[in-house]
Length: 401
Image (tube, helix red, strand yellow):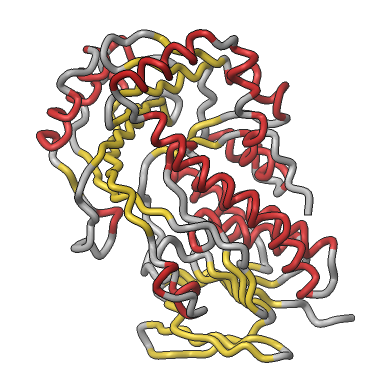
């Protein structure tokens, strides 16, 4: 019997955890290395579009995810100045029938907990925290990875190294892609807050995702945890890049920093923003799409491969797509180079298109003046079917390798 192959994954975020599950299902042993000392509850809400929930179903995770997720009945788009409804999509009814999987929203920590639960039950998966990859040596017969931990440096031998370590990926940096590969500042900040449902204005206590479009800003809110919370994301144009921050999840923003930015918006939006007791502040970066994600026995995944702006809410979804594609490739192709080539073919153009489309969507969301008027007139003139058809390319992805 052939020796079980061993994958080393740098990063135990959503993408890294999903990749561990996918590779285990393909017969691999997996070592997950996370530089944080503990995987603590962090972040806020995530939208899981049908392209993501379809992969979670493929990985045998969807039923458990849906136990802790929320399925909004509608997606509503409203104009910031007067609250006019520009469009409404009954996603709770249509998503599974149209795209083959549900649309859901979930707290990031709850999704992480489901993935960690699955990994903990899997004898093929080992998770080490407080473990930072500092280097690697790629040999013809395998890869040797240097890992820094509190008790010193150790070396782990494997068959594959996966960089799933985020926007400022150490693995991507070690590949030496050059200064031109640096993260690109978007000129925008995401402000994130969680509001207890009973403290939210009555007019927004609905089982739906609402997107407000305003000049140089937009606002998204939806319920989480069976309606206990409302998740708010407010994205504004900003000069702040967060260079002073060691841990972006821990950057706080004061309510007084946020409310004035929405003072001219419709009362429903203003009252919700004022209801937030505290905010987290997150500078928004992406990178230019790259055509190559694999280098010998090293491969990139998630934000390490394709960080993107959040205007299509696809960051986590694309990392989950990557994980599914990687597991699929190793089930289909027995030889590592063939599988990695298949993974790269399946993912680079797709993820690159989402990066570019997310940038373009941000421009559309933040229009002002006559451009915003033209956008709003277009949206109100299109039928629901026509508006939904514009999402088919994104949500109907089946992930063939």
